[in-house]
Image (tube, rainbow, N blue to C red; front, top):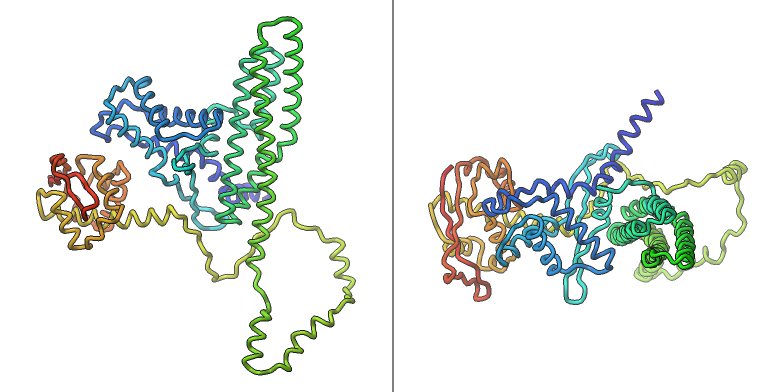
Length: 505
């Protein structure tokens, strides 16, 4: 019976943690589903998405963590175009390289949205959503720069490193063995891995701060997990740093006395280790600051949930409106006669002496029937808006294709203007709709419903499911119009002419 209880507990209450642990692997396998055979009529079928993802992660780790600088889009574009030529022997003109690089960048960043999936939490008996990113962005000055996330670094290390409770400890034990065996060049690589792990913890610490700012209670869960898996090893890691530093100093002394030719490698190893110690100290200071911020934010959140039991200002306004100045005594008399002497029952005294505080704070139990407020992320709002707008455009396009065998974009624009008003051409979703739709030259409704290949086709499938089987036999092609015939919209925007042609399966 006891064994059965343990198994049941692991199934139910540890399921959520397991779903969180596989978060870092999810984007890779999502990207593996990307098929180059459907993109641009299969002319890039020689490319391998798994390899491209790995080399890009290594590139961002090198630039962000080893060189301590963010990556611009121009730097990414130059690197990935070099990979096309070097590893796949793919020779393209400049415009084709830039277009392919942009397509891959959108896939890696998931169109700027986090990779997300849902799972059922049996402990809370409801579905939850997990979000993660490989590459994130921020604005520095007037430029947008990109950097790798902590989940992406952890995933890359998992593909080769042996995970222990503290990767830094494991690496330092290996470093000690390499120093004693005088393999100093191998020691440099190990120290770089330590720097990489420290950078990952720093990135994770920044993500915890961001989550604390958005949702303090979810942030506290992430903070406790971060403390358990990272901060608690700091003291032991510092001791190992000190021991390896002493080993290098002794090796330097022997090398100078014996005139060995390894002094240069030792100096490089010593320099890398100093850098690791400095970054580790900075991480320790940052985590101390994180602890203070977490305590302050939690205190403010708790105070904001307390309701005041009495408002003196409201009471004073009521007395003034009732013209009852004599009742002011009921407000001030309790303040002049506090009860200083207090007494307790013996049973209460015994309970106080034997009271054992809880090791962790328990969450508040909500009464039955109360509604829980779900936090809506900004990217979810944008995603809902894009799906709604794209759905309107798709329905209008399919309706026109069912009526006419061929028409131009300019003719369709006139119908959109009559149906939705001229303001539709100020909507950025209209132009992004045209860009996504133009990624393929031909669409078959039945094939799209079976297996959508692109972001546009996924929305198209959702829209078709709401319509029924009315357009299942419909297929159409997109043909570019004359380059000289540009469509002007509201004397502000210009788009290329597109010719839509209906066909059947």
